[in-house]
Length: 334
Image (cartoon, rainbow, N blue to C red; front, top):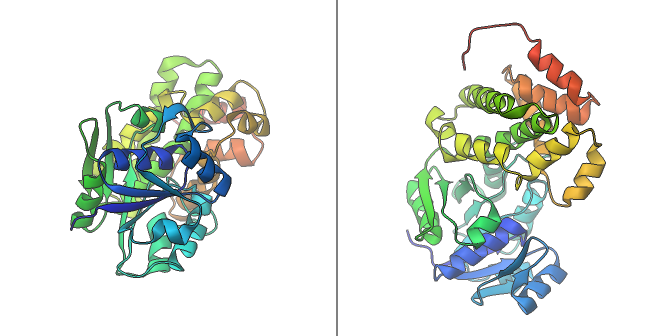
């Protein structure tokens, strides 16, 4: 299977960077966004200064404000929209596509309306014959735009399709591994955002590197416990889409989830910090969904539980930390 043309949906930082990467690799690519004004500005300036200031995009990207035109003739639909807009974007696509359906996404999170994984939402919309793949791993869009070394995972139960998606993205600085564990790759990409909030809170409160390392390590244990309950492969969560992305988002201030935690740990209120960041913070909604998923499967996730309490139950950071530290002692285990 070979793919030579792509429609990227979502002109935020990640969608723009993916479209530019694919265009620079020599493939035909169109870029669509629900904001016609944004698409028109990108077409005119060849820049996306709101999300990737100061960087110029490839002239080969075809910018389209109308979805049907953007998707026409393209072999792959690549979604890079926030999780809360994923299902709606699929429904709009379904109305203008003909089989065979080939979809991939770089969205990280769960569907906020149903709590389901995104591949389940896509299957419902496009049926069991659709080819589906998820892209995930430790990536900041601006570093991809600058051509800095990056590695990610392309996951699909159809490994030929995973390889076809990977082939669009690979070049001398962008390495793509393939994986057949679609659920595990999505789980890692979702849970890490919640844990990055916790790491940010810890650093915001001045707890230092020791505490951050402990949170990352025990957070990984929580991720793997939930993965085991859901049927994800442990090696997936120990790879780029799991521990790799977890380390990145917990330790670098380019992470919006980490920055949210930093602000909360410094005593600022949630709405103020959200306004300062000014972009989608996936970990907020994902914290509620992962907390509910863990409870449903009776999986112990104390860090996720305290992030949920912080965001949704009005618990102060100091109280959340105290509850974590005063948990009953036990042997270290996953």
